Each structure stands twice: as structure tokens, then as C-alpha cells.
Image (cartoon, rainbow over all chains, first blue to last red; front, side):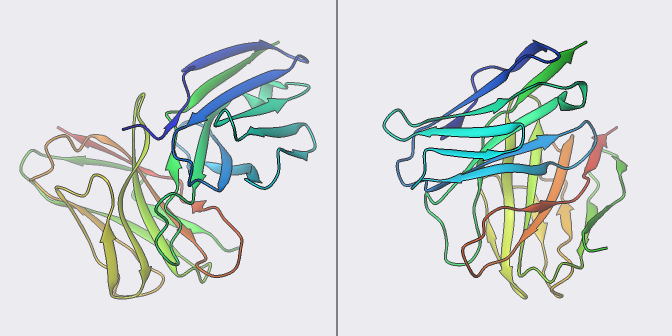
Length: 116
Length: 114
């Protein structure tokens, strides 16, 4: 049962335009959401996060929106740059969290390609 | 600089062999995790550990074993019982107190069965 889903395996965007990556979740117990960026043969790096008490969090060119009623979040990158080309993973925490350790549940990832 | 080191970066294993992947962190994090990445399936949790000498199975623990004898180290053994071990393996760590969330990941080990 995939609790966190990224239904678009890939996305291609023109440099300078907005990139929008989507993520859906099914577990209403999730209370914290994160986006990670991953280059080939490297580990993911943290990008931005949002708590369930908010509906928007912004950090420079990156903004994450959370729609709790729809169980949907999205990552907006504007303007998109060539260095943004990577795989982006959505992750969620809180559903079944064991005291102490954070069991993040990841989506399948979306490969973003920024075209010059 | 603090971080997580995974070694080796590439590893080849023959059918029927056990192989151990190394993960070391100097972030003073209590919790450590092992994930596996397969194409189209995202990251799946294999094992995690909240404290030294304690670890718990994740979603896909069959065919794997771990140990946590030191806070800094969380090695993963891929045994011959793992039916499809070829994958990219990621180690991560995190704090267990406070309100901060999120992992720090290592750079990964790509395991190929030959």
C-alpha cells in the first residue's frame, strides 16, 4: 500500500519557467512533510519541509503548498534553473511514528529536467 | 565536517554470498536508518535503530541483517536469502529529540549481483 504517491515519474520544464511537482498521501496521521532532491549516484539532500499546521512554506525559489483536505502537497520552483534537474522525493512523517526515530515514508520520485 | 560516510560506493556480489555495507556518521545522531532505492519504487525502509544495541525491522527486512554496537556505526549485511539484492542502498541518520524532522543521508552504495 503506497501511502505517499508521486504520480508523475518525470517532468520537463523550460529554464526560467515554473516547475510544479505533486505528491498525494493517504494517511491522515501524517503531520510533517518534506521534499528531498537527489542527483544520480548520490544521497538525497533536504530541500524544504512543511508542518501540517501550515498550508505554505517558502524558501527562496522553493515553495511547498499543503492541502490537508485533499491530502495533497506540491513543490513550486520558480524560476527553474538547469541545476534543478534531479529526482525529487516527497516524504511524510507522523503516521505510525515510533517514539524517537522518525519513520519517513517516501514517494516514488519525480525526475525533473530543466531545458535551456 | 559532520556527515555520513557509506562505503564502498560500488559493490559486486556473487550469487549465494553475504556482503556487508558500511555506514558511519559523526553527527552524534541517535537514530540511523537503511533504505533501498529501486527504479519506480522510491525509497523503502529496511531497518532502523534508535539507540545503540537496539534496532527494528522496516518494511522490507527479509534477507537483511544489521547491528548497532556503536552510536556512529550501523552496518547492513545483505544475505544470500535476499532474492533480489541488486539496488542502490542509502543510509541515513536523524536526531530523536526535539521537533526537528528529517534525515541526513549518505551518498549511497550501489550493489550488483553478478
